[in-house]
Amino acid sequence: MEIRPSKRDVLVAVGYFALGTVIFQLKLDLVFAGGERSADFQTRLAVLALACAGAAFRRSAPALSIVVVSAAVALDLAGGLTMPVILVFIDVLFAAALHGSHGLHRGLVAVVATGTLGVTLLVAVLGDWRTSLYAGLQVFSLICVPVWWATNVRQHRDSAEQVARIAELDRRAAVAAERNRMARDLHDVVAGHLSAIAIQSEAVLSMPADSETVRTVLKSVRENSVQSLAEMRTMIDVLRADDPVDAPVAVRLADAERLVDSARAGGLAVDFAMDQVQDLPVAVDVAAYRILQEALTNALKHGSDATVRVERQVRRLVVVVRNRARDDAEGSGTGLVSMAERAHAVGGVVKAGRDGDRWVVRAELPL
Image (cartoon, rainbow, N blue to C red; front, side, top):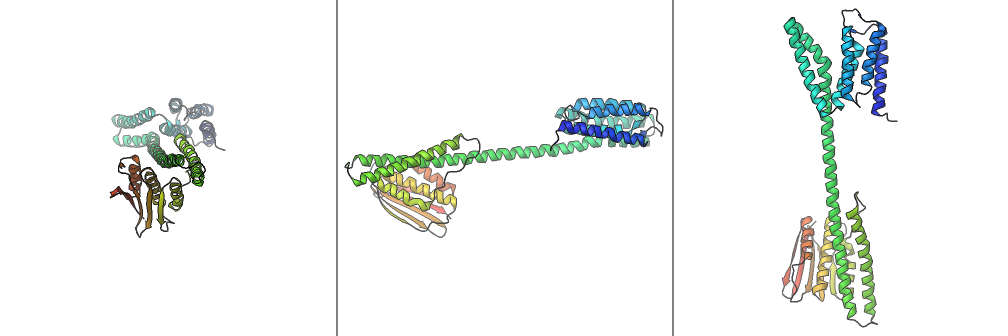
């Protein structure tokens, strides 16, 4: 069970009071009094109680705690400075320097530095300079050391908090970048499905109503529609979510046969051949699938037949799509830009252009 800081401070104050009472009873309490007490036991206990009362809110109100404990030290000094009060004062000074505001911390540093130097100079002027060094060392040990220690701890804590904030910002940036990448990926998928639906629907309108091909095309249209709706919902969840969402099922080049079947259902004659593509790097696998999907979508729009070759070489994967292009077909759409970006993301290249009456898309992706 974790104790709240306010209750912990009260327990610490009670512990100091109990310890001080034992020290008083054992007569180990005098620091500066020449071995004689000018105050009775009850008075010294009352001063200790005042100091402990100030220590009870050393975190919640550090400035007020310093004032109360300093008043107790002044009263104790009149009757011979005692060890229990000094212990409470050092602890409160450390806590105020560590947990107080930046303004309070700077003020404490200035006060203890000025106080130490002032006491040293005052003793040197009024007495022996050797005694002043001894007095300065004592004051430094009592008030400078706890503030100095607290300052070092505070700096390490602030540095750790800054590192944690930077790490959190980096995490959010990484999540945002991944979310944008997923959204772009899903956008390309949905766009490909919708393009296929539009082309296949146009093909259906030109076929006899009772043709078996019509049923095949309509089945492909339905499958593309269902996939588009599912992935559109996933894309909306990705863009809407504040926390990381489960990634959609990753596509693989091994599923390229589905792309070819969809293109054939849309009326595109496809000559397809593919090497063994298992165990490809994930980024290359997905990029190759998307490039092939985009190239087939363009072939459906601008041609009537296509040749697809996927070759796995020693150090690279080569995807080539050739299709007969219309004379008015141009390569200025966003599809070519998307393919180029995907290839560049994995260190590859995409070249697209006319080769006689054919339009050729050639992607080379490193393995």
